[in-house]
Length: 116
Image 1 (cartoon, rainbow, N blue to C red):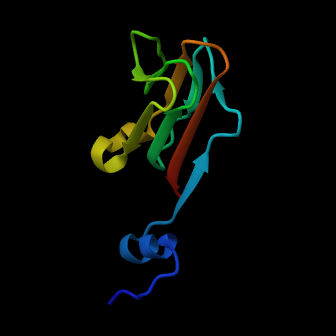
Image 2: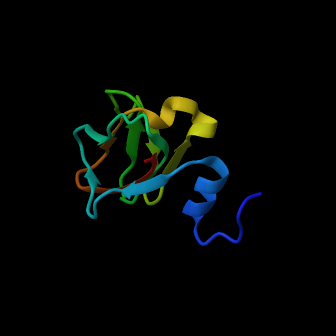
Image 3: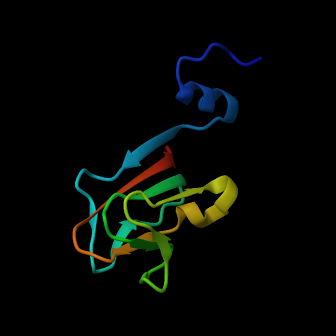
């Protein structure tokens, strides 16, 4: 019989699923620009990721080695968001993700959950 009450989400995940999970976020001031950059490297331990465009410019991301306005997932200006998780997207969350913006110095945020 499971132990309750739990004192943290980490305890619930460990007790019920046997999982230890940690999160990592982008550094403060993380930006996309006119040149393609690697946002997240491939990681087989990544369970989920959230990408948020905080800038006034449109941004595009892709799970590949190439992204462009006509080749990627559009994150509209001022809050466009894309969420991945292994339950709905299978291995896609663990792929490398690249990004580009329609303008320089475009504030961008990501958060990932990883097995540890």
